[in-house]
Image 1: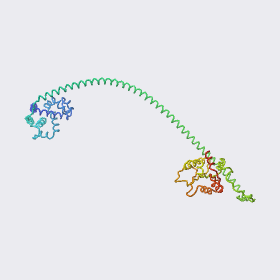
Image 2: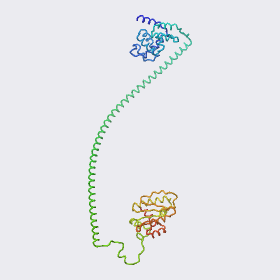
Image 3: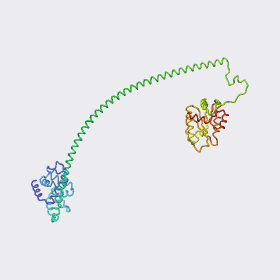
Image 4: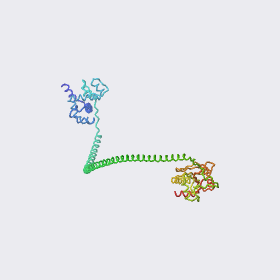
Length: 435
């Protein structure tokens, strides 16, 4: 073991420069792959450097350690062989590689230490080294460039020094502002804590008030439930009392009716009919008078009296009224204004109203929205509105009050013969104006 170490040391001192540089490059690269515990202490600070920088800066330390520390050399050789498996296996097994670079083979042999490693180093020493001739002009040019670079470096250093001074002054200002900001933040935090405490206290008061309100609300709901139960019981009692009173009244009325029927049977009275004793007296009978009192057709009081008759039916000649009231308006506007006003009249008097318009005036379908209680009819093709009005009057049973509103004398005369009452359009217009 001592002889091997002596031989290694002797060989290391005679390593050709290219082989030594390649050994340091391979070892520096492998240094970055080793665990920190396997790296000698003098080399640990270089392990984190880049490979090129690590090889340059650690050369003075790495070479002697490889010469003296056999364990570290073997670890390095293992990593180098793992990075160069083919060439490393060939060198370790003593397999000749004619095409391989002698310097590369010698560097691997130095680290792996096969039996013929010294021969590989000797072979690498025989490789001629090219020594280029120094070029004086290039040297002078490089010297001038170096001087210029030094001058520029000095100028840059001075500018950087000025910038550093400015940054220091700015740093002092920023530190002062930072201290002021910190003081303000401290004050704001104190104020925030105080306001937070006040808000928490206010929340507690609000929660207490909400609890009181909810408690009062529950009491009120309970009271409302009790009152509703009392009201329901009262209504039930009142309904029972009304039903009892109705039952008593009905029983009393049935008793009276049955007593009257029994009395009629006992007296053998014949049932009443339309014939009366006065009908036996002969004489001339007058013609039937129109419905309602005799008065001018445009009398406003007469119109209200006729509307007050029970089950009265008011039939209106539509265009006869609208062209009298709104002669300058379009027909569709006239129709809508009339039925709208009649809707208000129905709401007041609860009468049956039928409005008849002449269908010959139409050029297409009619869009009309009559209010509730107002019946609207258009005369069919080939039939005038006057004929429809007469048909409506004939359709009513004898004795029902029928009032026709039309200024047309032919219509008025014909419906009077049928037993209806005729009023002028102006009377309806005046009545609508008062609605």
